[in-house]
Length: 176
Image (cartoon, rainbow, N blue to C red):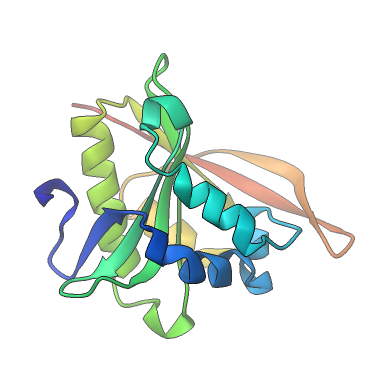
């Protein structure tokens, strides 16, 4: 699919073969704070999720895509459109690159550009938003480089290890 293909990466639908990748990603406790996860996922639950991943975004209200390097099938990360709201033409967007050695190489930047284009052109969304921990400098930089604007701070929004952390809400409005 040309729409979801960049120069170094492409985005594809989830496949049954992604089970182990997603299992490792979802159970990586260092990533739980960015996904608001507090409990591990079983292979059984992930298998069930993958069996239903064929659902249309209008039915499932989300779209999760694997981020893959050009010429490779294996995923290095995931990018999600979530809380899809066709009535108000908006969705949240989240992204994760699994291995630290694959970060800061421009893969997330390219994936986000592809999803923004897809969201605004194919899905005809009016806006995208992202919830970002105020301490997550890398994500803040990534999203603001694409024009996402800070529209508010949710005070003491997320609790980790008996401490509360603020979460920023960023928004990108389609001007087309």
